[in-house]
Length: 113
Length: 111
Image (cartoon, rainbow over all chains, first blue to last red; front, side, top):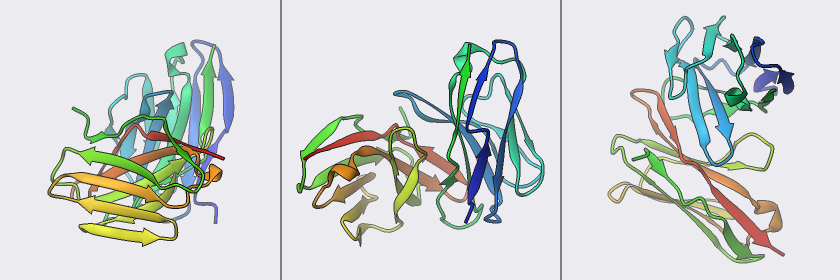
């Protein structure tokens, strides 16, 4: 019962470094999402993928890129990390039909120095 | 105006009391409604879903939906210190696969 798996769980980067956050789900969900959560800000949608082969910008896409590698995997890339990207990142997935909720991974805690 | 509004709290209740958490939403196209619980340092965990007007009960939790008033609430009966967490309200417009989350209400249950 893995659900949504995110790697890594923690990461510290220096300003300007790049990295990719990985997300995989085993629930056969069509839709996948990336959020960031900052204190007092709630969840903010970065990018989402309604189905394999499609991606769309969310509320705060600047500084990020995504890849929907296949139905299971959705990665988030920071090309040149900035201190403002210090946050907790959550990946989520859902079915794209019907009325089912999102299911979240455990999160990646990212610090940019 | 945010799509989903919640009072940030904190809401403090004594152990054994009823905690009432409220949420309003702006899009009348919202069709499904969810409550998530998030412990500090953890990810959101789904605790209730509600799709039609009225009440839905699951153990100590009751979700209430009033689409005419665009209002969703979560009642927690016999509150326990382990219920202390942030509660996120979410709505879904599933024709467009659009989820909206509130910023959450922090609940403190005092022993």
